Image (cartoon, rainbow, N blue to C red; front, side, top):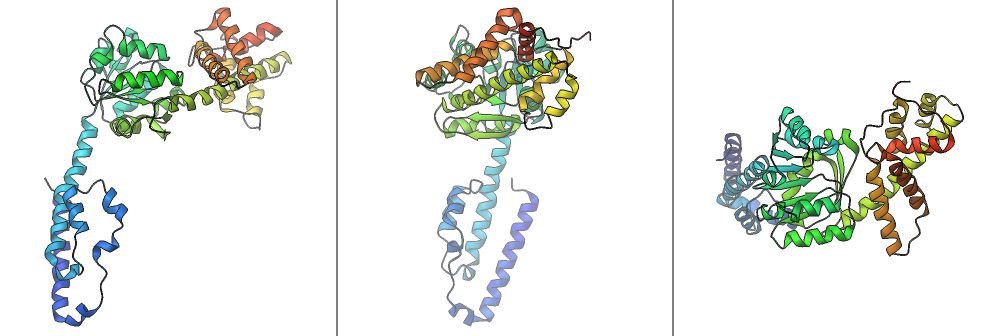
Length: 397
């Protein structure tokens, strides 16, 4: 149905065109002046790429007469076609967005934030996590829970996976009761896990053989930005995969980097990010533990460094965990054991030396070996403290 305000606008424009016709008849000499065709004033890009104008309207644009002001009916026709086809297509696009059903698998600190951002965007969201507590918390916050990942994914237009690894993603898709068996043709699977690029390419090929799109879409930004719908997404996949995933991407991200049309590119970019992030956490932990060993006021160290050139996003984000003595996991040590391990494998495969990444990996391995693998990655500061005798704050202090 054509919006009332649009119909009125069209009629008003048609009336103005008829007025011009009448003036032209009263002043016939005007017709002797050469006129550029109206279609020439419309760039090919605008007529070819005007996604909100129907195909019939585009045809009329391309075929407008040389002197359109002498043919009011053609102008009226284009207005009517734009309104009847363009507006309806735009309305259809909006309706498709609001009708998109999104399943989110993984309701940890990142997944829960993403799920709530999707819900705020008026998408139809159903969530699943292996933790019954996480599912209950999601339902309490207004979401709909599912009894299994397959139940969540069945019938969904978009499935957003917020699990940790490529191995978990593969098991979820192709293991017993896997999502690949229930996802409908034309749906898109958005994988945010950090994984080896070769694994991402393999998963994409297997899903696409079943007529399901795969978007390689690792994320960065932390739990707070996930909850705000302000993540950074490093994505690669087919244009169709991007188009179908767009409602979810728009809701969960402040910036979506479209890195190419092949799965694995997003994963490669994420590995570069993880190399830097892992080193920065290790460096921040080393620095704060040294400050403790020197007997410095650690709160003052934090104040000074965050206003100085030695600051990093990771220092600013992770060191408050050390200052409070609270190592409840926002991002666990084991994540960087995995990610820096992948980085080293990639570097070795290309005969590339990555000594800083290798040194940082040893500290994560040490923390894991000391029983801190499931605790916050700021626990590296405790490893340095154990090695040096430095005293760090505790919850009790």
